[in-house]
Amino acid sequence: MKPRLPYYLVSIIVVMLTLFGCARNEVILALAVSDESVATVEQIHVATLRQPSESLLSVYSGDRAQQLNFAQIAVSVPKKRVPGTITYPFKAPNLETQFAAVGHTTNKSEAQFIKSINDQLATLPRADRNIFLFVHGYNTNFASGIFRQAQMYTDFEIEGVAVNFSWASAGKTPLYLYDRDSAQIAREGLRQTLKTLVKTRATGIVLLGHSMGGFVTMETLRDLGLRNERSVLKKIDALILASPDIDDEVFKQQLAAIDPVPSPFVVFVSKKDRALRASQTLAGGQARLGEGANIEQLQAKGITVIDLSTISDGQDAANHTTFATSETLLKMAKGGAFSRRALLGEKKASPLKPLGDGIGAVSDVASSIIYLPAKIAGVR
Image 1 (tube, helix red, strand yellow):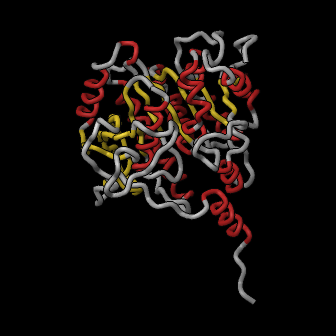
Image 2 (tube, rainbow, N blue to C red):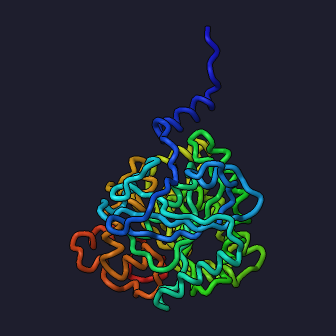
Image 3 (tube, rainbow, N blue to C red):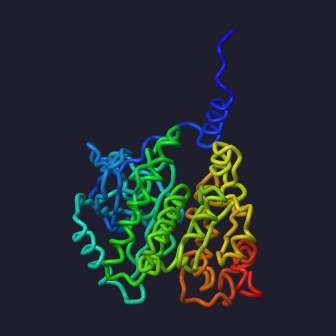
C-alpha cells in the first residue's frame, strides 16, 4: 500500500489548488519607450523591503531586505482599455494594450525620495496635495503590485501622489507562510515609510491595505499607537482595508491600540471571497475580517463597511480584488460625492448627499452595499 499524505497536508494542497488553479507566469516589469498617443504615464514612488533583483525585468525580488530602499517607477497605462483590467506585458510590450514600465530609478536616498514626492505635489492644486499609499497583499511580486496601484490610480481618478509600499512577498502560491512571516517583518518598514511621508509637504495620507497587506497596515498602526506616535496617525486622512486577511480577534486587539483611529475608516468585505475562505481553512477555521461576518460590530466602532458579496463584475474569479476591478464600483466612485467619500476616503463630501448622482440604478446598488457607521443616524 502506498503511504498517504497527512490529512492536513492534503487539505492545504487542495485549498491552494482551489484558490489559484494552475500557477501563473511571473509578472515582469518590462521596459518600453513611452508613447503618450496610446497610453498615459503614472508616476509610482516606491518604498520597499525587497532585495534588488539581478534581472532588469524584475527590478526587485521576493527576498527580504534589512532596510528600506526607495525608488520611482513610471508606468504606462493603455488608454483604450476596459476600466478595472490589467493586461500584463511580455518582454517586448505593446503599449496600446499592455501595462509596462517606461522608466525607473532605484537606490534613492530618503531625501531624494521626499524631494521627488514634493516636486510632484507642487504641480497639483492645493486641495489635491495628498498621498495615496498602497500596501499590496499575498502572492504579489514587485511588478504586479506596481501595476495594480497604477490601474487603481487611473481608473478611480485618484488625486494626489501615488506611493507603493512593497514588502517582500515571494509572489508564489505555495509560499503563504513565507509571506505571512514577511508581513510580520514589514510593519517596521511601513512605520518608517509613514514617518518619512510625514516629512513631505503632503496635506494628508490615504492608506489602502489589501488582503495580507491589511494585516501589515493594522500591525503598523497598532505599533504607532503603542509608541504614542500620534503625529503620524493624525496625518492619515483615511484608512481603507480591502479584503483584509486578518483574524477577527486579532483585528479587535489591533484596533484597541490605535489612537487616534483614522477617519474615515472603510473596510471592503465579501462573503464570496474565495481567497479569504482558503485563508480561513489554513487558519483552522478562524474567521477573517474581510469575510464580513461582523458588519454591525464594525459599524458600532465607527467603521464604514462596503459589502461586495452581491457584486459579480470585474476581472477576479476569486472575488478577492473586486474592490479594484468592479465596473459597478468604478461607476459609484465617479457618480456622486457620497460614493467617492465611501470608496476613496474623501472627507469633503457630506454623507447625507444622495448616492450615485447621475448614474441611475447604481444608486440602488450603492444603498444596498454601503453600511455607514452607526453614529450617522438615519443613513445606511
